Length: 227
Image (cartoon, rainbow, N blue to C red; front, side, top):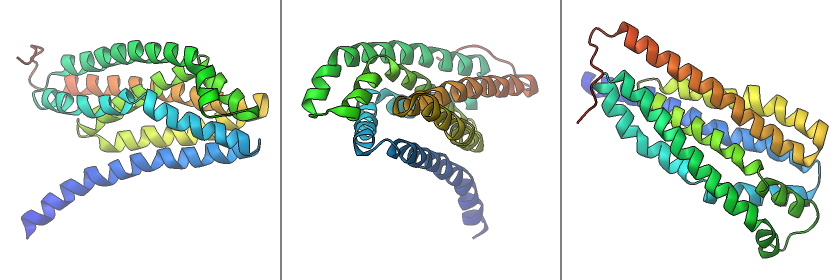
């Protein structure tokens, strides 16, 4: 029974943090929706379409964060600190190229999407605004997903929770409100994007600092790549 309790405790220490991490996103989206609702039903409809389009177009943000988990975990277990840094750099490079390609596709597809969804008014304006370059903000959101996956697989699931709630508390809450005040409905999207930028930069710096501390405290230094 003691063994079951220890295993369950180890499981819950990771699972509870992962649950809280995933809870931050819907909380943030609920707040963004309330800010957008001020500008009417069409603005909310446009934001809703943008949300679903983002999930489809930037699916690599989610798939990639799941894919690097085993790679990060393997190198963490082998104490390959240099390799862990390279994983984030290579993943970010790949994500940047992918995000740029998708953004180009969306730029030339904006009018088609407006017609396909039969949008007008604020809804069409917001969708075109998103497609005309603002969608690139999702690159930074992808970085957050990758860093969170790396924290989860290096025994620091609580760090990922802090990152996501920081994006909501210190990012969405003030920046979305500020963007809304300055630029209206479009400012809500800009504020959301700026929160992604600042959170991703903070998360990268935190992860790099964490890896440096691991390297400094490790008694075994072996930078060779895993074959």
